[in-house]
Amino acid sequence: MLYAYINYPNPHITIHKSSSCGNIQQQHKKSQRVVHLNSNTLSSELLNFKEKHYKFGANPETNDMWLIVDFNPEEIEQGIVDDVLDLLKKHYSPFRKVTPKVHCEL
Image (cartoon, rainbow, N blue to C red; front, top):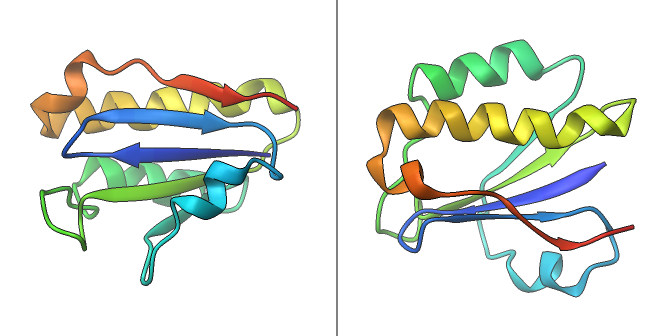
């Protein structure tokens, strides 16, 4: 399982592969948006990103999001984050220069 933090005003995506990473808890706020991506939700959630159901903007309600990606084998998890980013790039130009960075490994 990996955790990916998406920030819009300062466009970046940070991947955390260790659930014990301290940054995961630091970046959670009240009413934090969290999207779970697994074998049961992947199709519908990718469609939500494609159809822009998830909005991003410069206000506290829409400026960030966490993705929790849970697949087996784990090797495809980062590819799913890349797929979400590709969909975001179509709607939000600040994401066009973003490359996900890995903050912590297992």
